[in-house]
Length: 323
Image (cartoon, rainbow, N blue to C red; front, side, top):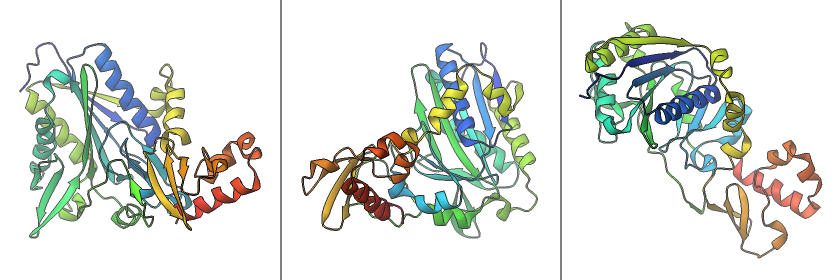
């Protein structure tokens, strides 16, 4: 256990359900922690409106059903950490550990959540990937996936905790119909999942939060300062509106897609950052086109420059990608 003489324990309870706001704030806290060379240990507990949250190096078309996500009005988000694709809704509690990189311990962080759940009667355990799982009625289920990021002086370890999430939507949206010919980037690892409330009907969100707070303080043997943060508090921070705007932009979400290829009729199309970089028929007029037609609907000046051939090709790409 780390020496806590010159550090504090802080538990941030975020009241915002906006995933772009919450992830921008998480990033703000991580970078402030590093810039100040802080020794504080921090946990954020937060929830989101229905969202698919990708890892930094993932391909949305390969990982999930982008068309249905858009049709349902569900957020598609690209986070700052690596790892796989996860589903958020108000039945899912997210946790984010931020601490000094010199004392970064993934198993210690996972252990805090595990101990909190065990104190509530849930037989949780950590696996080699630091995901949290549970044995229930002879079956092994995943209850929490996690991802990580390290910067100069600080480290982030965040994860999901399925309380009462819509598992039907989760299982449907995280199974893409699209098949790429080739694709770089991180692939998600599929697992059987279960909600904590389906294991024990005596659980509640407040009990889980309180138990995490108690486990946090118990591990570090010091008091926990609890801070309630509203969406307005976050948005009033310097430069936060522009950071939220960047996080929710098409360029960040789709424009961050690693290189991949797909078949369009008899043409092999290679895309990087959601722009065409090569086609097997060597038609130079198709290079640098964006493969998502909605991009042009938001960028009218670029749309007006398209020829009919380019316009038709983009529509054809869209039909293949948005199944």
